[in-house]
Structures are given as structure tokens and as C-alpha cells.
Length: 168
Image 1 (cartoon, rainbow, N blue to C red):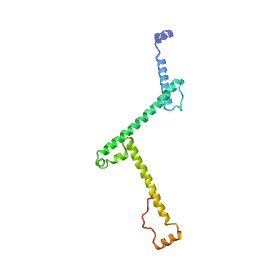
Image 2: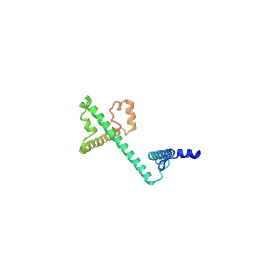
Image 3: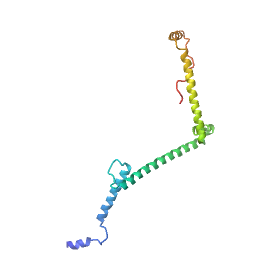
Image 4: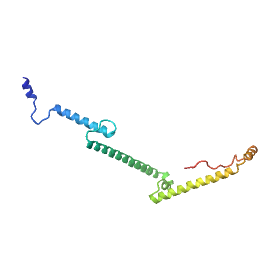
């Protein structure tokens, strides 16, 4: 009777038993999970056995990271463009249309011109502040004179003082 039962469960030659197909599918699934873990972080988890597989997964990882950050970059450009377009369509855009050139100059020469103006302004502001500070310290060299002026109220309590910090 056991031989009859064995014949009933026997499969034709060339077919795979469902039990071995399931174990083969589970093995493929396990390998795929391990490969994905390796691709996410190559430093943790088991490495694939073959050098070609490791190389492919690592290259795919770097390419995916590159594409992801490139898409983020273009999304930021699109968002800034959408915000500028939205503001340009309002009353603020019609009032301050000249400010757009200063904020985002067009072309290489425009950028160089705005950069040159910024540098000249920064240099001029520092020179002016240094001159004012130098003149301010010239009159305060004598401490006795300063004390005497403070006691009499002659000093510069209401005097206009120059700015103390760079605006840049």
C-alpha cells in the first residue's frame, strides 16, 4: 500500500515539486532582501558573495543617490521659479521689478556687475566707518579733558554716532 501511495504522489519527470519551488522562491526572496539591504547601506549586513553583484549594487546605489539629489535640485529651482512668478504677478512685482535684477542678475556680465557694485559698496562702507572712528578717537585722547567735559555736560550725549557694525 505504501508503494501505491508513493506512485500516486510521484511527479512526471522534468517537473519540479511544489515543495522545492517554494523553497527556491523563498531563497530568491531572501537573496533579494539581502541585496536591497546591501544597496541601502553597504557597511551593514551580509555582502553578496560575487564581486560582480557587489559592484553592480554599489554602482546602482551611487547612481540612485545622484539622481535623487539632482531631482531635489531641480525641484528647488522649480519652486523658486514658481514663487518668483507668483510674486511678479502681484502689485509688489510691478513696484519692485528692478529689484529682480539685483537679486538674480541675468548672464555672466550682469552677475559680474552686481558683484563689483557689492564689493565697491562694502569697501566704501568700511573706509567710511574707519574714517569716522578715527575722527571720534582723536578728540578723546586726554582722559582729564573727557572727565571735565562729562562733568560740565559739554560732551556728545546727543551727538550722532556712526554705525558700529557692517551691514554685510
